[in-house]
Length: 187
Ligand code: FE
Image (tube, rainbow, N blue to C red; front, side):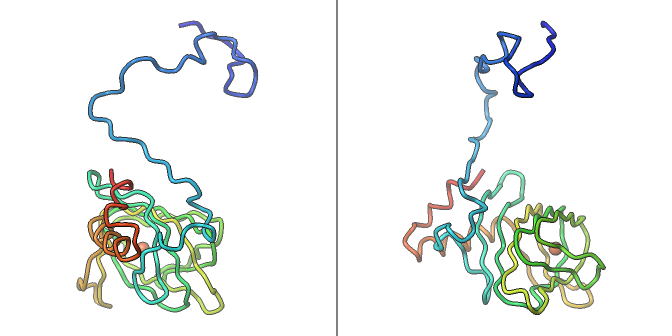
């Protein structure tokens, strides 16, 4: 290997002639297809049919549904204020807040537009969208499950990648996209 300075990584002309040669071998056997969702953050322009109803004034748009790793990436859109749910996480959650603000009753931090937040596995919390927020939109990467709980932590329901797939299949079938529209998002 020839070490060079001024590689093309920073915008200059590549000085190593090998740099621009695409990998020419085969991909490892078993690698799943990659996945690209154009306009994922173009919230208002995206086809409204892509938003799957979850409860009153709450919809989600799935971006990636990982059946092999047990996680999902979706954009949650809430168009009402108030309590959304009390839940425990069975895995880690990464959240990028795109619009509005929200918080958990149990914690003193707020998720604000443009902010990132991490929710550790095991944490039990109650999501509230405050009065005055007309729309809260957040991209969530959720591993494992939401376990909905009562105020004492007793389980009352569950949500995971498979319930997301089931809801999305039913909705996409109903709006004419076809249940198998979901297949392109499953890995
Ligand atoms: Fe949570």
